[in-house]
Image: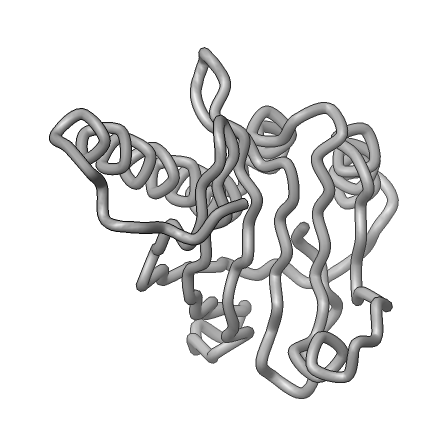
Length: 169
Protein backbone atom coordinates (compact mmCIF):
# COMPACT_ATOMS: atom_id res chain seq x y z
CA UNK A 1 0.00 0.00 0.00
CA UNK A 2 1.12 3.52 -0.72
CA UNK A 3 1.32 6.20 1.93
CA UNK A 4 -1.39 8.84 1.76
CA UNK A 5 -0.44 11.89 -0.29
CA UNK A 6 -2.46 15.09 -0.63
CA UNK A 7 -5.18 14.51 -3.24
CA UNK A 8 -4.58 16.15 -6.59
CA UNK A 9 -8.18 17.16 -7.30
CA UNK A 10 -11.67 17.34 -5.85
CA UNK A 11 -12.62 13.88 -7.04
CA UNK A 12 -9.60 12.40 -5.23
CA UNK A 13 -10.60 14.34 -2.09
CA UNK A 14 -14.12 12.90 -2.35
CA UNK A 15 -12.77 9.35 -2.65
CA UNK A 16 -10.51 9.85 0.36
CA UNK A 17 -13.33 11.36 2.43
CA UNK A 18 -15.64 8.46 1.49
CA UNK A 19 -12.97 5.89 2.41
CA UNK A 20 -12.37 7.63 5.75
CA UNK A 21 -16.09 7.64 6.51
CA UNK A 22 -16.52 3.99 5.49
CA UNK A 23 -13.51 2.94 7.59
CA UNK A 24 -14.91 4.73 10.63
CA UNK A 25 -18.33 3.13 10.15
CA UNK A 26 -16.76 -0.34 9.96
CA UNK A 27 -14.81 0.24 13.18
CA UNK A 28 -17.89 1.61 14.94
CA UNK A 29 -19.90 -1.46 13.89
CA UNK A 30 -17.11 -3.73 15.18
CA UNK A 31 -17.09 -2.18 18.68
CA UNK A 32 -20.90 -1.89 18.77
CA UNK A 33 -21.28 -5.62 18.07
CA UNK A 34 -18.92 -6.45 20.94
CA UNK A 35 -20.35 -3.90 23.39
CA UNK A 36 -23.95 -4.90 22.62
CA UNK A 37 -23.14 -8.64 22.78
CA UNK A 38 -24.02 -9.15 19.12
CA UNK A 39 -20.97 -11.32 18.51
CA UNK A 40 -22.69 -13.47 15.87
CA UNK A 41 -22.71 -10.42 13.58
CA UNK A 42 -18.92 -9.87 13.80
CA UNK A 43 -17.97 -12.34 11.04
CA UNK A 44 -20.02 -10.31 8.54
CA UNK A 45 -17.40 -7.58 8.92
CA UNK A 46 -14.56 -9.82 7.65
CA UNK A 47 -13.64 -11.17 4.25
CA UNK A 48 -13.75 -14.98 3.92
CA UNK A 49 -9.95 -15.11 4.42
CA UNK A 50 -9.96 -12.21 6.89
CA UNK A 51 -7.61 -12.72 9.81
CA UNK A 52 -8.10 -11.52 13.36
CA UNK A 53 -5.31 -11.28 15.89
CA UNK A 54 -4.99 -9.98 19.44
CA UNK A 55 -1.33 -9.49 20.29
CA UNK A 56 0.66 -7.61 22.93
CA UNK A 57 2.62 -4.50 22.03
CA UNK A 58 5.62 -6.16 23.63
CA UNK A 59 5.45 -9.07 21.16
CA UNK A 60 5.02 -6.70 18.22
CA UNK A 61 8.01 -4.59 19.30
CA UNK A 62 10.18 -7.68 19.74
CA UNK A 63 9.10 -9.19 16.43
CA UNK A 64 7.49 -12.14 18.19
CA UNK A 65 4.52 -13.35 16.12
CA UNK A 66 2.67 -15.23 18.88
CA UNK A 67 -0.78 -13.71 19.44
CA UNK A 68 -2.87 -14.03 22.58
CA UNK A 69 -5.70 -15.01 20.26
CA UNK A 70 -5.69 -15.57 16.53
CA UNK A 71 -8.15 -16.54 13.84
CA UNK A 72 -6.81 -16.92 10.31
CA UNK A 73 -10.18 -16.75 8.55
CA UNK A 74 -13.87 -15.98 9.04
CA UNK A 75 -14.75 -19.61 9.87
CA UNK A 76 -12.27 -19.66 12.75
CA UNK A 77 -13.87 -16.48 14.11
CA UNK A 78 -17.29 -18.14 13.89
CA UNK A 79 -15.93 -21.17 15.78
CA UNK A 80 -14.55 -18.85 18.48
CA UNK A 81 -17.95 -17.23 18.94
CA UNK A 82 -19.77 -20.59 19.04
CA UNK A 83 -17.28 -21.75 21.68
CA UNK A 84 -17.90 -18.61 23.74
CA UNK A 85 -21.63 -19.18 23.63
CA UNK A 86 -21.69 -22.94 24.33
CA UNK A 87 -18.43 -24.23 25.82
CA UNK A 88 -16.77 -21.54 27.90
CA UNK A 89 -17.76 -20.60 31.42
CA UNK A 90 -16.90 -17.09 32.57
CA UNK A 91 -18.30 -14.30 34.69
CA UNK A 92 -20.47 -11.81 32.90
CA UNK A 93 -18.89 -8.54 31.86
CA UNK A 94 -20.27 -5.47 30.15
CA UNK A 95 -17.77 -3.91 27.76
CA UNK A 96 -17.59 -0.36 26.47
CA UNK A 97 -15.12 0.70 23.78
CA UNK A 98 -13.89 4.23 23.17
CA UNK A 99 -12.21 4.80 19.80
CA UNK A 100 -10.05 7.72 18.73
CA UNK A 101 -7.68 8.88 16.03
CA UNK A 102 -9.12 6.78 13.19
CA UNK A 103 -6.63 7.40 10.41
CA UNK A 104 -6.36 5.99 6.92
CA UNK A 105 -2.58 5.68 6.69
CA UNK A 106 -2.21 4.16 3.24
CA UNK A 107 -4.37 3.29 0.26
CA UNK A 108 -3.89 1.36 -2.93
CA UNK A 109 -6.73 0.36 -5.18
CA UNK A 110 -9.54 -1.08 -3.07
CA UNK A 111 -7.38 -1.64 0.03
CA UNK A 112 -6.45 0.64 2.89
CA UNK A 113 -4.34 0.48 6.03
CA UNK A 114 -6.24 2.05 8.93
CA UNK A 115 -5.01 2.68 12.46
CA UNK A 116 -6.98 3.81 15.51
CA UNK A 117 -6.62 3.87 19.28
CA UNK A 118 -8.96 2.19 21.74
CA UNK A 119 -9.77 1.96 25.43
CA UNK A 120 -12.04 -0.81 26.68
CA UNK A 121 -13.77 -0.53 30.02
CA UNK A 122 -15.22 -3.67 31.65
CA UNK A 123 -17.97 -3.60 34.22
CA UNK A 124 -18.38 -6.77 36.23
CA UNK A 125 -21.11 -7.90 38.59
CA UNK A 126 -19.88 -5.53 41.32
CA UNK A 127 -20.89 -2.59 39.10
CA UNK A 128 -17.43 -1.04 39.08
CA UNK A 129 -16.01 -0.09 35.68
CA UNK A 130 -12.30 -0.77 35.23
CA UNK A 131 -9.91 -0.25 32.37
CA UNK A 132 -9.78 -3.67 30.72
CA UNK A 133 -7.47 -2.94 27.83
CA UNK A 134 -5.84 -0.09 25.94
CA UNK A 135 -4.03 -0.16 22.66
CA UNK A 136 -4.46 0.32 18.95
CA UNK A 137 -6.13 -1.35 16.03
CA UNK A 138 -4.07 -1.81 12.89
CA UNK A 139 -6.43 -2.93 10.15
CA UNK A 140 -6.17 -3.78 6.49
CA UNK A 141 -9.52 -3.07 4.85
CA UNK A 142 -10.90 -4.12 1.50
CA UNK A 143 -13.58 -1.87 0.02
CA UNK A 144 -16.14 -4.09 -1.66
CA UNK A 145 -19.36 -3.12 -3.44
CA UNK A 146 -21.41 -3.68 -0.28
CA UNK A 147 -18.95 -1.76 1.90
CA UNK A 148 -15.60 -2.25 3.58
CA UNK A 149 -14.54 -5.46 5.28
CA UNK A 150 -11.58 -6.43 7.43
CA UNK A 151 -8.97 -8.37 5.50
CA UNK A 152 -6.74 -8.25 8.56
CA UNK A 153 -7.55 -6.96 12.04
CA UNK A 154 -4.76 -6.65 14.59
CA UNK A 155 -5.59 -5.62 18.11
CA UNK A 156 -2.29 -4.55 19.68
CA UNK A 157 -2.83 -4.16 23.41
CA UNK A 158 -0.58 -2.00 25.60
CA UNK A 159 -1.50 -3.48 28.95
CA UNK A 160 1.07 -5.93 30.26
CA UNK A 161 -1.60 -8.49 30.95
CA UNK A 162 -5.32 -8.86 30.67
CA UNK A 163 -6.77 -9.12 34.16
CA UNK A 164 -9.27 -11.86 33.34
CA UNK A 165 -10.03 -14.46 30.74
CA UNK A 166 -9.94 -12.92 27.26
CA UNK A 167 -13.56 -13.75 26.56
CA UNK A 168 -14.53 -11.65 23.60
CA UNK A 169 -12.94 -11.83 20.19
